[in-house]
Length: 432
Image (cartoon, rainbow, N blue to C red):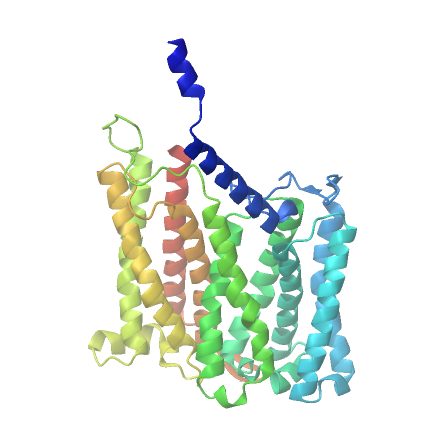
């Protein structure tokens, strides 16, 4: 009826108030994440998503100069390391090294910010941070090159900076940072500046960084044989504790299109799931169950359990759990597995039970993003533990490489299990 239609189109004062609050909230989010680096609901950014970004004036910028700029960051970092090695007076003591590092990073951040503006992009905290991180990860690559005996630059940092890197753990941690993080941070920096999608690589990177921080700060710096040599340079890791978590929150908040908990996959449908989907879900649940058992056994072994299975595990399967390097990095990493990953895997098992048996979402909901984050956890963790198990470090350039197939097998199984979980959730999202 006409008068009913009029009432339907009308808006009550309360709803008008809610609409104003929602509009204000959207405006605040836009103000906090300006330009092409602000994450949009699809997990991407405000740019075009086609390799071109939007400048502060609204014009579309080319991606080629941006790619060249980001590709130039690692060589520039290695050049800076070589210059500091050639001018030893700048790095001849802990305080001098710290002051030089602060000065160099101030210049680098200013130069990156100015270049981003000159390229026509709207600077954002995330975009600039990823560019800076690409530069610093290449510094870690240079220090790794010194540890393995390729060149001399980087020696000063092991003497006057973070001394705990002068170990097998340092070879593994800095090697992962110098290779994997340099590449993925460069990719994310490019996507952030040009408006590309940050998923799933942003979550994989965040998982890798988050997992690496506690073994570094607590397992190597605060405890262990190097804990009495900690310098102020360790504080330079602080941004890596905060920004990856903030990015995760931003990307998780941007997830849309995921059905709410309890909603059936097909309304009014009682049909069984597709065979491929059922197989993927069962495989993911089985892999998670296996990971729960694995992490429990690893925790028993690293904590010195007298159980026969734990002693066999640390002797024959993963001798790196004996922590012969004098740090507690492996201990902290295994504890993260047990306290973080085990509950998540239990949640994954319940999630797939809900989806395949009751045909509805469980409490986990957005399993794809959680799985990408977990994959980053495992990639960093297994690379470090496997490298420490296969590389005997006696000093810079004095390394002995050995093969330990059981440890490598555990690492391969761990990454495969995480990958199966990510694939299964991605398949679900694609078909529902």
